[in-house]
Length: 316
Image 1: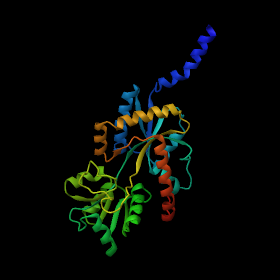
Image 2: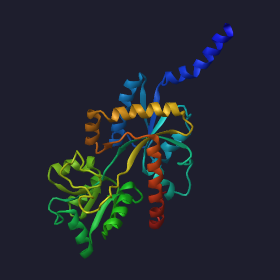
Image 3: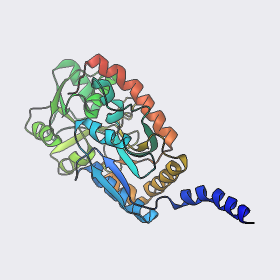
Image 4: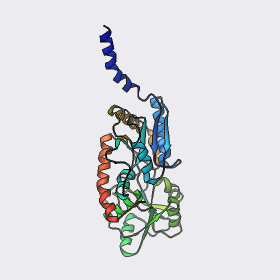
């Protein structure tokens, strides 16, 4: 009788351990500094996860080195579901092709959990620009020298611009900038013709009438800027480049814990209030399966690798 009871308890122990997860605080590492849209979104998500799990979910900001620092810290963590990472697309789809070496393998050392959000970009012009539509931009670029300003060489903004210029047949000088604010000021001051920005950064200036939106890269009109046409509406059929933000864990994290985390995140992202809050931050909530995130990473790497090589981009 004793042996049967002991055997039954032994068989139940793995189930009990699984059911108890999480039974201590969970940490989510992010490469973005405090206060930005990704950090704000993550803190809201972490709070909601903590409420759902009955355990604190803390955010740890590890900015710098184009995401290498934060992703490196993630892959060195124990694969037990208690350390996760909110990873921006460029960390695993751009940076690996633009540096000489990495302290981790983005294809082998990470376990995808869920696409959390996509972040459409928006093409903007000064209020008095003669470019009234996307078609004007494409046409005018063929007949006179235009400039397009956005973030530094090798960023997601730069790569989206290069992809779009090739797809649309646009000829324009790319002017890298250190910040969204500088690009906006250069637009307003007449030093730039067009800017490529995040909706969260430019919406205030668009609403006030100081800037105008030509097109947005989302596949459908974005709820935060419903009057802005998409690139597809503007003639680029089937084209909607949107960098993503994904939740990941160290490779080897138990599948049942990955599944639990994914479901919790997906359920939260379906909440109307969460969707509305993310729109104010310039994001479109997703909530995908781990397999969909993995496939997205591979597809983006297949696009980015050759383009980065063609452009000769090297990040220091």
